Image (cartoon, rainbow over all chains, first blue to last red; front, top):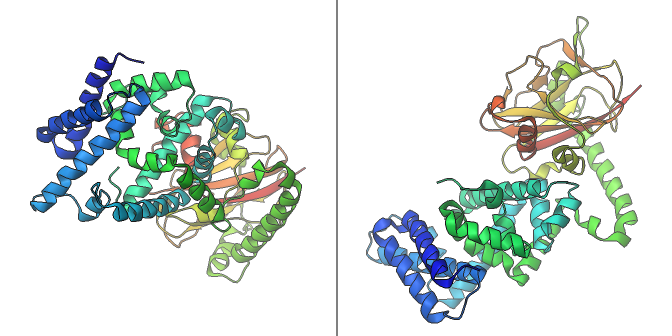
Length: 169
Length: 285
C-alpha cells in the first residue's frame, strides 16, 4: 500500500485529469480539491487503496454532476438533458431508485446485444468466477488472453450503452 | 491518451468486479494511480461497475440474462446433475432449430432468399473449381486459445445487434454432407450493407479466414442481395480433407479492415467478436 500522502497526491492528480475531460481545466482543480477534502474529512480513517479509489470516483462524479446541474440552472450547459437525468442529486432518493432500476434494464439490454463470448464472460464474472476459472471454462491456456477479451467486451458494452442509451461513459 | 501498460490495463474489468488476486490487485491499483487513461476509464464506468458489484443487482442481471428466451445455452454447463437430460433436450432443440433454419433458408425453399440463391449456388456445366485449401489464409493452430475458444462457442443468430445474415451452402442435409472432392459453394445475404468475412473452423480444429482469400478481395455485400463465395458464377470450391464437421462463421463489419494490420491470431480473434451467422457441413471420404 502506498504512503497515504503519496496516494492522495496521485489521486488528486488523476481526478484533475479526469475532471478536465468533463468540466474543463478551469474547474477541474476545484473538483479535485473538493473531492480530496471530502475524503480527508469524512473518510480519514480509510487507508485501503481500493476503497480510496472507489470513494474518489464516486465523490468526483457527484461533484461533476453538481457542476452540470448548476450549469443547467444557469442555462449555460451544453450537456444533454437526458445525461443530467442520470445524475440526480443526493437528496432525491426516489429518483435514485428509479434511475437504478432503469440502469439495470439498460445494462441487461446492452449485454444482450453482445457476442456469445462476451455474454459468457460477463455471466461468469457476475457469478463471481475468478479469471483462472473463466479461462478454464473457455478452454483458454493464457490468462492474459481472457483479460484482453474481457477488456474488449467491456469496451463493446460501453459502446452499446453509449449508442443505445446515451450513457456518458 | 493511451494506456501506459496495456497488459496491466486489460485487467480493468476484473479489478472493477473485485476478481483479481491480491498481488494483481496491488499491481493494478499502482498502475491506476499512474495511468490517466485507465483512471479515466475506471472513473467513467465506476457508476455502472458499482451497480454491477451489488449482489442484488448481480443476481438480477444473471437471472435476466438467463431468462432471455432462447438466447443462452451455457447455463446448464454449470449444473452437473442436469447435464445428460439437458444435453438431450438441447440436442433436440438444436436439431429442430437447424432443421427449421434449413427449411426456411435452404436455397430450394419457397422464400425469396432461397429462390435467388438456389440458381446461383447450383454448379453449372462449365464449372471451374478452386481448391478450398487455397482460399484459406491467416490460419491459427488448433492448439491456440482462439481456435480452442471458438470450438466451445454455440452461436445463436439472435445475438447479433445490427447486421443479420443468412448463410447457406449448396447441399441439403442436417448437416449437409460432402465427400472429399465434391464441389461446394457458399451463399449469403445480409439485411444491410456490410463487409463479410468468412471464418472456417476445420474438423482438425484449425481456424482460418476463408474469405476474402484465394485472390478474391471484394467482400462488400449489399443489403438484400445474394453474395456468393467464390463470387464468380460457375466457380466452386473443391472439398478437401480432413474429414469431419466443418463450421463456417460469417463476420460482418460496417467498414473494411486492412488484413495486413493484424497478426493471424489477432485477426481471427477480432472477427470472432463480429460473427453474425453460422453454418456447418460434414466432410466424409
